[in-house]
Length: 93
Image (cartoon, rainbow, N blue to C red; front, side):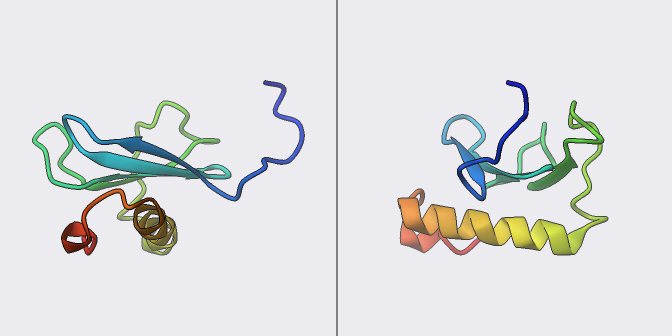
């Protein structure tokens, strides 16, 4: 709670399998959310946020920062494969 010390992991993942299937990765200051299918409420299937600058997640930086988006997206790819989060046929998004 005091934000001191070093996190034990390189990245943290949150899995949302219901309603609008999605997964998020948090690495340092960055958070990437990936929806597995488009949804009218969430037209962007990738949402990238700099939490130090935008804690309320109002400004999606995914289109402005494609390299950072791709790097975090690769972490999600590996997480999905490692945890068997989706069937293999769907694992290529």
